[in-house]
Image 1 (cartoon, rainbow, N blue to C red):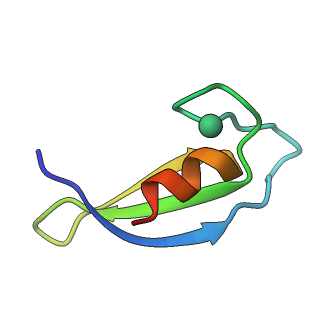
Image 2: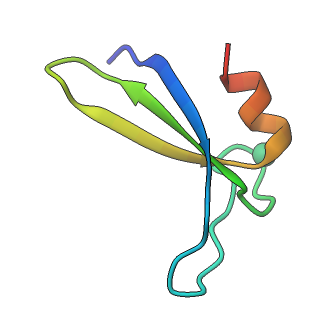
Length: 56
Ligand SMILES: [Zn+2]
């Protein structure tokens, strides 16, 4: 399944639960939205460093 980077937004924790970067496991500070076809949106959490790599 192809995913196309759509946008990056800063991520705020809800419920006081920490989220972790899916790439490196550090604390997530951003979430990236990807379009995956049929109007579906995939959201993945990243730390700042990995978010920059994804957001291109
Ligand atoms: Zn990371």
